[in-house]
Length: 298
Image (cartoon, rainbow, N blue to C red):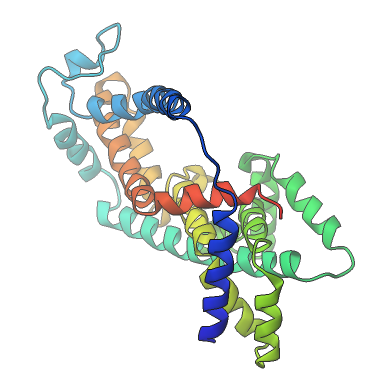
């Protein structure tokens, strides 16, 4: 087992070192400047969202918008707390629902997508390419297209107005299968064959050999899944009992109170975006590595 892992690490280092290339100092400086400019432009909406959460009401409506706050205040968060206390269900219940649904759906998405990608990437069987082409075509459709079919399926299964209606549809995504397959294809087949010679069955190869070596891919999928599920406000199409609704749904009710609640809405937006941002910061290196390898074919 240890010999197989060492062999894989050695082959990975060799293949990566062969891809390095030299660039002039001027080229490095030019690329750095371009990247910094692009990063600055992309960071402006995030900066504005953070700053707006601490702006008093009179500064929120200043035109043109300012990216700095002159008189920072926590009144927006206090107002948000008051509005939340007036909801039918206690705030911890919404938070609990979001945490459970997001966690279970994300873990299930990793397991199911990786299990689907494993035979597509490392086995040859009739119809493999056709199945993968269907997965690629599915990437072109947004999630809203599946609302009606999802509702019909959940209704037939008797799962409307339950957690299952929110968890099961997010436990398999075409993007997850695509990412995992593209990354698994980079694994040397010699490692898989060596594991089979050592007596490993397919389940052990998948869990003990493949999954540890595609950690960057499933960490990236964790980020994408967590962000999409955590911020999903479409639960109202599947759940009608207030005690089963999630945090974004509750905060959207607060935000729909008109101009008087703009400050509370900004505070709610900051609260919602914080967990995905923290998760991305934790695993950003893995995301970059996955994006680089997803488009590489040996």
